[in-house]
Length: 170
Length: 116
Image 1 (tube, each protein chain N blue to C red):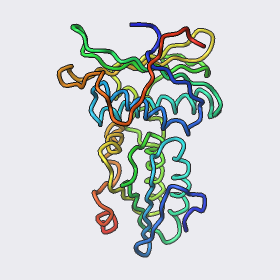
Image 2: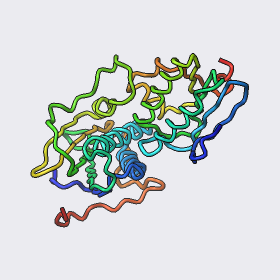
Image 3: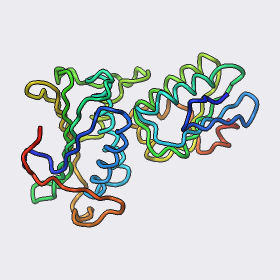
């Protein structure tokens, strides 16, 4: 797979823009063939990850950059396909080993984001970026190919421009 | 009394001591503070039941869930009841993922919530 996501979105760390990121992710997940409820869960996981970056990484500074990348995994002989979602930031770095959800038996407000991400996605990986910031890579596998609409099928209300793989501006 | 700052939460008092809060948009990190503010405001006085009608809420994240957990705690401390109703499957999914679906009183309709 190419190192660069096929779809990239740069957003500012303002909670007001979470809805746009959710719409994009949900739309692409639907096109790949995830069910409505799975699309909603995938969008939720991305929302939680973005919220964690804003809340903890940037200490609620609302003017910092976040890059959201999406790469559909097309079905092949060895894979059932899915979606890889990448989030990168320039926030403070943390030890990936410390990214753990809290004990759910201890019912209290907050601290559910990491648990939700781990529960929804099939694979979750946190990395320190070179220099500064963190990279979160989340993978969700799709249903069997024979149950999925084709990627070329047109989804209602969804217009997405794919990355032309030109050199990164970062 | 409704929060004069609230732009997305309808507040009704169908019976003495019962308040119904009906958000009309997604509840995420950008809107949870407003929901928290309204909940705190409506929890006092003679209120013995708070109904949260999620009929118009298509999406909720963990910040909304945390707000409701806090409200549930506050209701318990005030000897009041908090009931959630009209939750769609996408919203109920987060309650299940967080394993909080049994922590809350959740019913199907507003009428059921009011009469509970």
